[in-house]
Length: 563
Image (cartoon, rainbow, N blue to C red; front, side, top):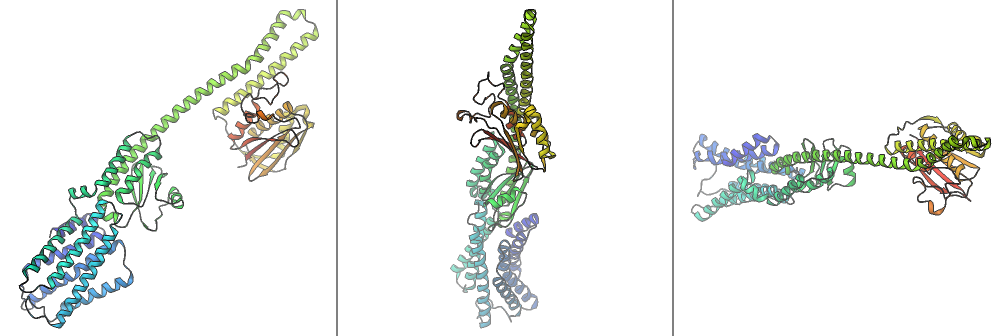
């Protein structure tokens, strides 16, 4: 009767098929025990005979209902399904078709012996099916689920032994009757513990998983540096808590943070928002909480036998969501701090570069101005003209340096807007080369296809201008500019006919203020052109690289994606 009440309460709370079949099974058993006390042992007449046959029919149905409970999780094959249906039907019909049921101590006719044999075979077969299915399914399950399943399996086997023992009891066989009653009582206690184990029993079963869960919660309370680290700390204990063969953690936006037991293909599908099943676990349980979602691939038995564990998992998911939100705030604060540090470093570097590189032209200009101001009346026309020319050159140099420093500051601060648009490649390169080469444009050989590309024209101008200017400044003419499309990217190469770059400078060629092996007195320049060209190319998701010319010279190759 206690089993019937507990099973009914569970069905009323869960309203699923497994709980429904289990409730029917124990309600049937409760009716047999309770109503059987009012049915006489030696019925006479129809009013007494029919209740007896109904009770026996309920006894026939009990193993069938328990079998239906066990097969909810893993449906049987068609042959077993037909056999069970046929045996149950034959027994049910025979229960009401037999002439009578002999009382204890009466002779047993052959037809009753046949019915009794069929009854015991039916009970034994269904009990073995229930026992084997539940016992084998308990392997690999967490403590509570495994304990409940194996207790139910043991209870089913014990009840069958009690039923078989009752069938062979004689009139004065008190020892067998006592043993049968004891086995039946043990079976009832095991059924009750398997259906609704008390808190103390659950705690004993859950001790191993509880330790791992407490360790995971302690890990969540410590400050992790990344969200993936939080997910990794909790994933193992979560999987062990519900006996999951695979598990994954998603953040509030559905992004995959960590996974365990998934192959690469399944992991990619989960990252894309799918929830694919696995061969050994076709159903995916999703435990959602604010800020985090757990996906667990576990056995079909887990939702019924591990229902409390799933509720605990809900709590862990909520704690994980809080931890992920805390790490997200930490990451934002860390990124803000790094941004401020980077801005301070950029400002300091810019000031240092400006002070260092502007010192020479400013000092020179100041000296020329002082000379003209204090000694101008003592200088002849040619000397004054030379000073003015030198003053103009230094002014141009300083203006160019200031412009380049401003370019570097914008690139360092990632303040360059990349705005691709449709341009004619050859026409654009002709315009850039004519401006960069100036009066020496005839010394440039341009080879470019007449096609449209999708690039930022301003970035292309900056890069090619710097490379052509460097080719004339450090190399020799002719300068060759080639362009072509390769795998959806525009490749532009600028090659001079000079001596090339010294071997010892090749590794540092794109660093700031690196000069191509010439003295600052012989060739005017800042050493910023190549650094600026590469920075602009990378802002456009491209790059600039150096190659040795053949047979001599320096070749700089630019790759810019045409999007």
